[in-house]
Length: 534
Image 1 (cartoon, rainbow, N blue to C red):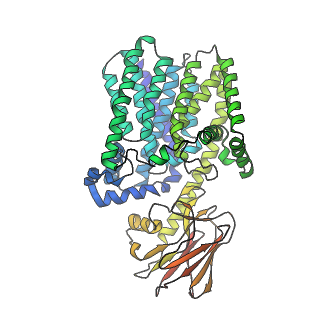
Image 2: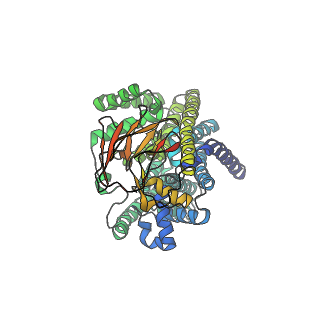
């Protein structure tokens, strides 16, 4: 019987993989953009010895570096392999929520779990994790969390000690993949209290407490030794920055984002929604609490009440650590990765909560949720696809400059949020040409500004103002200038200075030193244009 059940889940995993890969295939060009290329440089420069210096990473995450380094060493910049790896992880995570709900819902309702898995699989906010090469760390971390949950459930059913050891191994791998994993033992703690027999409490609760007390100090000490700081990644100032009101606002905003797909509302209505939450945070919180209280009243006699509570607690525990980072509703895709882990348990929590009121309410709402997810996911993937098409054209039509100095006055930073040419370096496009196409113009190139594309036809015009000054301007509205992953500001260096207008619609660039025979290029539409007679 167990073998037949296992075969059923394996078949579901295969179907989820095929469906997800078919959907995401068009977006494969987005895999090696932004931070993904930042990782390639130390891999190339340091080789396997890079493990001795943590590959100069901003976090201590050796398990993740092990996977990415050897993946790159074996497959290089193979977009298909990298995408397939992320899709497999994503399909595994979706399959595991099906398994979990089926295991925990007393009625063993197959449709409820499958619906939760389908919604998560095609949730439109997952593209930053599934497509973008660096986002896979969230899929890996979630898969390791499932390993923890699976092993603790196996122990509860069999009382075999080996599953406790497996549980600890999954946790150790998880914390050395992403620091968010420190939430996992707390989630398991509530799982045991709410859903396990009292006879299992002592051993399991003691284990979770011991893991926190032993691994947390160890993690901080290793961080201090390897990174020179107690807290890596975004740094201690960012991770410990707590503004209670803003955290509550962002928490409620995540509910709206996941439930109502507010990212696709008309800007006026979307902004009005988030402004209401921010300006009336107490009323918004009271409304959320009232809805929760109403649900508790209707579901008070349901056999799935405790499961719903566990799922909501886990969602809240996983979203709290990211509430003080950034929440960007007005740019698609950016920051969506932060909600990857919380979204799975939010989806499951909502469906199980509705199921505790009535089965058909859960299935009906879930079906609508899934259909809306498919529609909006397709919109995001079309943006990744368009970004890839533009990048292909730009990279394959870039002129041979020889040894001439190059000034790139305008290049795409993103296409409706889908990453294109951005990284921590000052020359993102030139770095792509060096790594992907082995054409090295870094020493002779200056890249001035990037911009956000809204369509493949977006035009940029350049006007010669005088012998040392150019005006660079968008032909249409809706674009603005970017630099170093943020809105651009005026620049002033030894070679040139820039002045951006009040609307970030155009800028003046004045050359203090005008190199001889320089090539002045700018992107317009899907191709390059050269400034003539300058």
